[in-house]
Length: 163
Length: 293
Ligand SMILES: Cc1cc2nc3c(=O)[nH]c(=O)nc-3n(C[C@H](O)[C@H](O)[C@H](O)COP(=O)(O)OP(=O)(O)OC[C@H]3O[C@@H](n4cnc5c(N)ncnc54)[C@H](O)[C@@H]3O)c2cc1C
Ligand code: FES
Ligand code: FES
Image 1: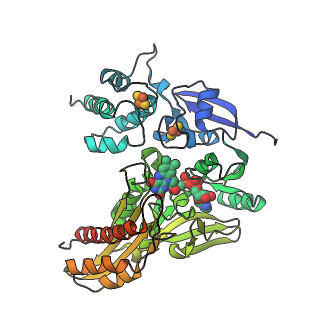
Image 2: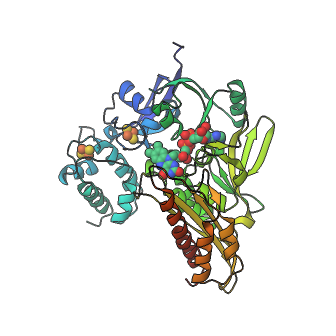
Image 3: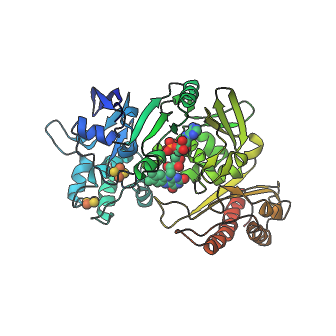
């Protein structure tokens, strides 16, 4: 056994400034789940293929399983937990997933929703084909994707005042 | 947790060189989308890493005074695609890297990693080779410029010396001015798949759009590393814009390449793809240049 190496990682998580000593071998998924109990961040494949661990870092989507926790130093990180209102209210995109039956087992859902947040916050209107491409970094074994696309598309139109 | 023996974070390019010389066994990690996967697979388990991911000075795209486009090695694929300089002058590169993996991979993957991995299927490889890109390497002794064709040594091996990191990819004005290009990635899925064959063609037409002044063609997965197809280029250069020229160009490419059979596809299928993709890519490049095709 060699000595475990730690690094102080200071970052903002869901709007709150935090810091902790982190094992340099940790992925960002490990840190968010183990050190901050943000369990919406799922461990699916852990090799960047499925998107279950997806979070927003400085406004862009990253698979946190292939992102070293130490790189999070100085970054602004958002997970699904950060979307909830002060009393645990669901955000519009989360509600749309419920309404459109875009959730079955739910394992892929937080990852999809965080990508949807990046899409929605761009303020742009996308075609269905463009949305398909923007969501293509996620695998879902249950829904067949159509309802997920519907949820994202409807929320996009609503936010743009077009539905 | 990753099976990392030790990890050193570079604070500057010079510091990266120092760390690499101090730890000759260490592996450079940029975005990690190859390195961390190989660590999970066991191939790099227990490795010592030198992280250059924090070197923000290696991010971004600029135009130098002489018109050279400079792409910092840590620039992510998504930032290349969105960049106005790329869109205006080498749009095909932005399109090519927009076919890598999926959106999250395009946010983490860097062009430096995509070239230094020495992988033939790398989606930026063929276009960079087709545009005579130059690789800028920085080490303890200073900078070295290497044409990308010479940078690739063999599968998985590039011309990186001890203590060196790739700091930029350069595309000279004469290599892009007046050219339009098109890249085709042939894969089994539209996303999250590696190319069965990748083909990048670009062309420069005469003023009346009737003659091909220059044509360049490069492939990924047609040999051990991304490669040019000089016979195809010779078959099109100076020739009229026509079906015949395009067909001769595509056929001639077969003399230059040497694809192999893998679990993804047979050699025969790849040869078939190489010809057909060259035809389609050149036609599209001609159309984009204003030629009648
Ligand atoms: C799910 C998934 C899908 C993918 N799909 C594709 C795809 O469709 N097309 C494709 O081309 N690739 C794909 N990749 C591979 C990978 O994303 C790319 O090769 C990417 O460009 C690697 O960049 P990186 O910065 O993450 O590299 P890293 O993993 O950090 O490094 C890759 C290699 O380059 C070396 N290196 C990195 N930067 C430098 C530098 N500046 N100087 C010297 N050496 C350096 C490292 O030592 C290592 O050997 C995929 C990967 C994953 C995980
Ligand atoms: S768990 Fe990260 S992409 Fe699958
Ligand atoms: S709802 Fe089960 S994986 Fe998507």
